[in-house]
Amino acid sequence: MAKVVIIGTGAVAKVGAVKCAEHPEIFSTIIIASHHLPKCEALVKEVQPKTSAEMIPYEVDAGNLEEMKTLLSKYHPDLVLHLGLPYHNLTIMEACVQEKVHYIDTAAAEPEDVNEPEFRKYYEKRCKEKGFYAYFDYPFQWAYKKRFEEAGVTAILGCGFDPGATQAYVAYAKKHEFDTIDTIDILDCNGGSNGYPFATNFNPEINLREVSSPAAYWENHTFHRVEPMTIQREYDFDGVGKKDIYLLYHEEMESLGKNYPEIKRMRFWMTFSKSYLDHMRCLEDVGLLSPKAIDYEGHKIVPIQFLKALLPDPATLGSKTVGKTNIGCIFTGKKDGKEKHYYIYNISDHQEAYKETGTQGVSYTAGVPAVCGAMMLLTKKWNKPGVYNVEEMDPDPFIDSMNHNGLPIKESYTPEMVE
Image (cartoon, rainbow, N blue to C red):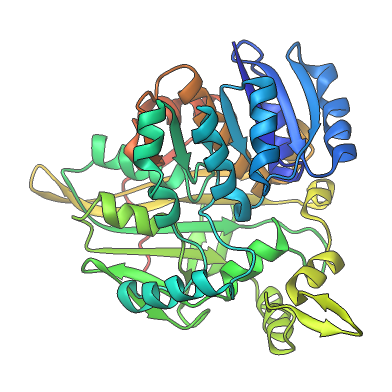
């Protein structure tokens, strides 16, 4: 029996609330916290009748350290499940380590203002040293490792699907299928349709930053930069069909490259339609993807935040979205001296996700692993203080939990390879 604070009230946080509520034997008290109290109250009102767990709404600015510490000192939770914006990762981690509370998030930390001088200095240095150019990475969070160890609590970083489940798939493949892994292709396919000419399946600000950043792949222990959306393949996804996939940079490659130095090449691929890319390029060309504030009639406006206000809220897409997702990892490597191929993945149905949680499949696949990670910590199946990425923990109970909570694995030993 444990108390958990869920930060956020968006679609992924809603999945987190629903799935935690399904397990009151573990999550006896669920505190829904965000800067907008009416949204917290609405989510509690929707989920409370379905669970014997106590649910509490709470208003907090997750980017304010003192407010976060007040929340934690008032309720003394066992865990903070951060399902809000990655802008607040570091502040919430600081509050957790000071108050000795476990921590889980679903994406690497990134700054809201990418032009802030200190970050910009670090960013330019990192770009030269490591070869990738996205605004999100792990070193700021890894720096908390010793402090979390000394506090006797655990932080699990990037415990969504990708990052998250995909890293558990790597750990599982190494534990059960390979002596050495040579290559990994991580494939993220959203075969769903929501009827809008242009919409993002999670926070537009984060989604569009990620997609429009320069791409990179990992090879020979370093990153190699590629212009965004310039490397494209076609792949036939089980349950979805043939889709165009594009090479991106994604944060799990950074931690996997560190923790599995044997890997010779690693790539991340995501599906996009021609219509989506045409819209995105047009928005980028006119400056609406810029995170840099501009003056408009005496007001400071951040273009990408203004665009976010114009686009459909991802939390409202559940009832409209049909089709399936397919996310997983294709491996090559050696077992007992023999070459081997292996593919582990999950297929999720958007409408099935909506029936269970009121959200579409992309939010479902991000929220369920976070709750499964929370179960691992609270039942002490993952039990070592410090700061870790998912692949550093035992994959077996985590994958078993996902199997029983809506994200069962599928496997192939003769997969189509990505050329």
